[in-house]
Picture (cartoon, rainbow over the protein chains, first blue to last red):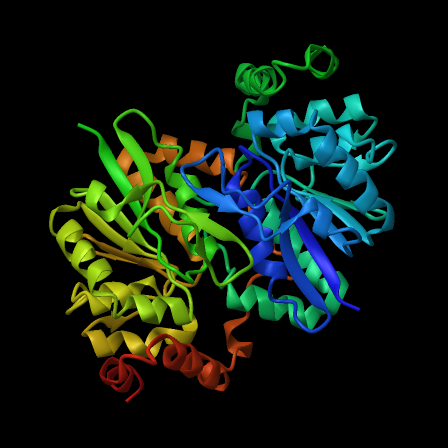
Length: 226
Length: 226
């Protein structure tokens, strides 16, 4: 039986949150297939100047083996109040082996009620929102707690996807995926020096994303910003 | 005057080659704008199960400040024989500050005649094709030779884009872009051990991509595989 890895597409997400890990898990063949699932097949705007289109609808993908929920900014908070998306996610997660997220996608898992009591991570700018959903925030590149795997911001989805491929198909296949995308990273300015990052100074930007995404959902906005 | 950074979209490319660097340079604001340019605005299939749509047509983007050409497999070789794409690329490159590529996108630069005598790189599996276009292949994460900047395979586009942002707007902006996408890479199995990679063993796969992409262009195929 085919094991479907379903990436959730919704308006305004961060394209790299989806395309990074998808490019990794798409290497899985044989029993696995990777799909992008959305409300419909319409091409959607993202938070960067690139448009993405799904390959399947929510109705067509009913029992995926794994689900991956990408994050973003305002669009992700709007998705936190999208009952059609949350219903599909709850149903899919109930039978999936793994329910994963990238960046603020973990807040959508939280909104679906999937993070209660779980260790989880998200983009560094939104880590303090996780407890609003009952999650225990951790500052790691990705964290697995049972069947829930959450990654840190944007590019961390690539690292998490290599972990998932290792889990699903073994270390050799994970190394092959890494080789195909030549993931031998060398940031020209080195890694991030976290001692130099003043996280509270970014708070207004993060709050603005929440306000923009949840303008029509004042109760959830109050819960997340309160 | 707005400085346009134009990513070239064509059928069958590797989505991450485009979306990775685009997410980095899209952080540039003020005088800069990032666009995705294609023959038309139709949503196109890629070599993974995700569809991408451009934001502008070739006719609309006439004098970009920078051009970035993503790579891929068969679709990229087909693009090496796409005269409309090559014409636009030659014209754009003539006045652009930087003409860049990711992965096998450098072979499209080569097909456009832009790599003659230049040091350049590409995906590890296709490095031996570069001399067919007069380029001098180097095994680096990315390499700049005058106004030509070429990156290694797929994920190397992210490192190259951080370099470009540093060049265009300074180190502080590059660090900000890196922070926003939380690019503090931690591959779960470590980096690639190049001593363990048997590059010649992958040759049949690489030749198959060339044959599939250039089925209708036997002369170029013979030149690249001969």
